Amino acid sequence: MKFSGYRRPDGTVGIRNHVAIIPASVCASTVASNIAAQIPGAVALPNQHGCCQIGADHEQTVRTLIGLGRNPNVAAVLVVGLGCEGVPVHQVVSEIEATGKTAEVVVIQEAGGTLKATAEGVAIASRLAREISFLQREEIAVSELSLAIECGGSDFTSGLASNPAAGIAADLLVEAGGNVMLSETTEFIGAEHVLARRAKSSEIGEKIIRFVRQCEERAKLLNVDIRGGQPTPGNISGGISTIEEKSLGCIYKAGHAPVQDILAYGEAPKEKGLYIMDTPGQDIESITGMLAGGAQIVIFTTGRGTPTGSAIAPVIKITGNSRTFKMMEDNTDIDASTIISGDETIEQVGERIFEEIIRVANGHMPKAESLGHREFGIYKIAPTY
Amino acid sequence: MLLKEERKENLLKNQAIVIHAEDNVATVVDDFSAGTVIQFLLGDSVQSVQLLQDTPLGHKCAIRLIEAEQDVTKYGEIIGKTTVRILPGGHVHVHNMESQRGRGDKQSGDK
Image (tube, rainbow over all chains, first blue to last red; front, side):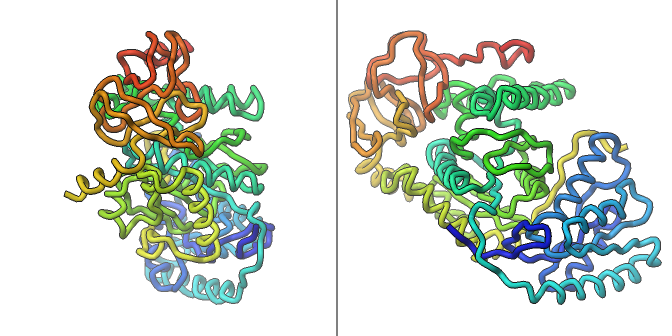
């Protein structure tokens, strides 16, 4: 099976053709957004990070910014730095450039302030937009797709309909030789043994268990137990009997394939197949991590409905709740409530989701993209100093 | 109003969902009283079971006999063990099954 995409110099394939304006720190975010606002097709990734972060938290921000610049949906990059932030601006540029795509830089303190830096940046971004405008889509094997799977605003239909159907779509992509990423470590608690059993090796299985335990330990440092009384009284009255049942409902959105490895936040998979990424359960930060890891497309299951999208990848929304589909039709692409009503099987809806993935890869806009939803956030693992 | 109409429609179709062919429980998609015969799809075949207790929306019922201390299977995976024998149609929940994680949610060190 094929789709049409943009072949990048490093061999990866984009399904969108963005100029990304990446601020290296919070201090450069307004200038980056102002530059992007002037250029059709340019997207800014304004964030609150990049300075006064230490250790693994600092490294994670740098890795994420580089990963987003390297994402194949990004055709060219302008990094905007203040000049004194902790993020090594020129290292970010050179690691993005290593993919063969053009990456330029504007430093506000060197350019002479907001107005001069914005003018310089607009000139560069305009040139980048012209340079990438002639790029043509070509026929590409589906095995070049990397799919991020997210869930948010869950309800009783998530585990019954949208998540198992998303899992079928994930299985179809893995069978076709592509990549699938499952994230949200918090939501593995209680089902990590199932993921570990599906791991490619016992070593990877132990690694999965370790990551989930570490997630729990981080919560304990705050003197709260994130699973205090799980399943919650609300879950129990809704019919969930055990923590295994609750977490299985979440993890089945990634299907049944063997787990190749567990990736750090923002890390790219080395091989094909199903990967787990260590991210928080917060939807936006979780999606950012998978995009920094190279995913070009996102499917997002929801029970209650949610509007969020992404600046650099299309996000397809799926609900198993017929009432939500009607109430939140502005934001929801696929109605999986036919599984609940008995009009379609989980497999049939899964195949429909897979067809939609191909259609969106070919250029069709899902609703979040057509409404300009560009929510963005980077996961932090330590306080700012 | 809308929800009621939808539910009425659902009653004529699926009344419970079995996610995986190996599962021994179904999840009901409406509130049902004891004695109701509910239909569900198992693979390609329509099957039915008579509910032994009132079973609310989103709760599970056994679709086969499950002996005491046996695995309860949903999503094709074990979600816990029964504490007593559960007859086909029996409500399966915290009163007759338990997590295999034991106290694992209280002590990070144990299994």
